[in-house]
Length: 377
Figure 1: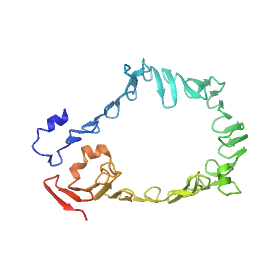
Figure 2 (figure 1 turned 60 degrees about the vertical axis):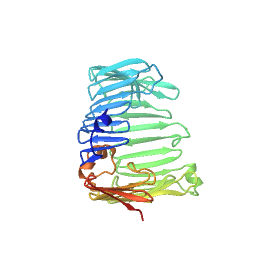
Figure 3 (figure 1 turned 90 degrees about the vertical axis):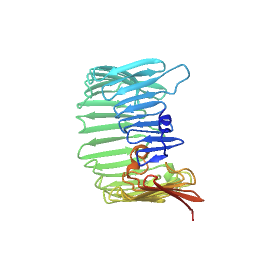
Figure 4 (figure 1 turned 180 degrees about the vertical axis):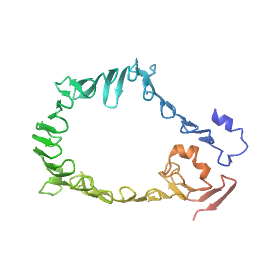
């Protein structure tokens, strides 16, 4: 419908306000449509083939279901939701009452006068673990026998361990059974904020004034296969300001917020596969194939950005087809190539842009008022 209305216009582009091409049409800042996405006064309203949202508060999402079934979910954050899942209707009016089939990792969530009563279940191996809570977070009990009277005492069962606390967070302790996926059999305890220990088959850790100071040693087959006779190591002294680690997955030195150096290792060939250096936390980042100075500079494979003046994207970029480079001036938005910004607002400050292919470059100045083509060098 939008494309039909805009096709009445006499020009391909009128300043930053109107633009149309084969898969794109915009009457900025009122409406813009590209492929399956339509924006109206973005970010007020956006619709897609199977969802829409209003002000990021009212949301509708249709589910991909077999023919003949119309599963969906409608929400008004944070007070209302309703929908249909597996052909069954559900709804909730928070915090009075509700039933939801799946929220985050929780399934079959029920609540009444929250936090007065809550019940949900989660997968545990081939079975389900049901948790009940009264006056969350003070009283809770689970189908595996775990229970909690927070903060006085609590018992929590996990697949390979049992955890307890008393006067949380002052005293916590745990016992671990033998397993192949984590650190194996052993125990741990902590009397916060003074001292804690972990002693497991493949891990030894001492914590002083936790979480600020700790020394950790771990043993893994991967680390040994990389030719190391000692354990993997990690030192925090004090966290988060100083952290050093040497493990099978990575080497890392962090002096936060001044400096960080990370080298990631590949498990299969035991070689370094990527690295990054950071300065000023994440203000300056130097990757193997990219350099970023937020928000002023970004240069890497297929893109270049000098904020707020210039940016270009090629090949794999979100606005450039394969073999094509798209460049523009100005580039005021501090994050590059955000599709919604490009559709609705970027044209207002894009005074010049070009698209280059191996044979030629098309130039557009002042929103297409001046156009020309030049041969690509």
